Length: 118
Image 1 (cartoon, rainbow, N blue to C red):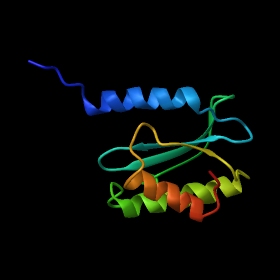
Image 2: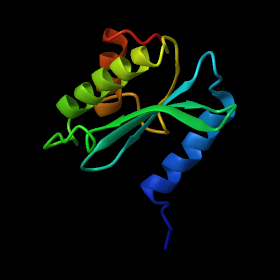
Image 3: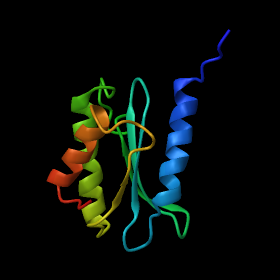
Image 4: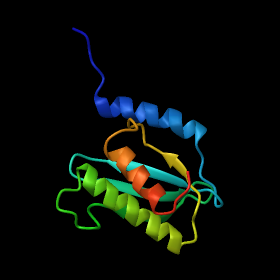
């Protein structure tokens, strides 16, 4: 019988490959995305210092159904507004091993529309 790898394990492998190429600095931090079945989370991280500068999630915003595209758009807009307050304008986008479609794409586009550059 052929053993099939779990989807999340394959995602973690893809994410580690991406992380070898992407690095957030103080000038250009990393915008990381994590999605679960019910919620979506975004963080802006300075990898040099190892700290999270800004974070937002559908759980934090108390969105009833944070696991859809509309919830992702709200989280993207919120993270961009918080980044502006923290005087962050430019970030490197880390899709977290997920395909750039659906909720991940909606979050990224909403963040771009609200002033983040990547």
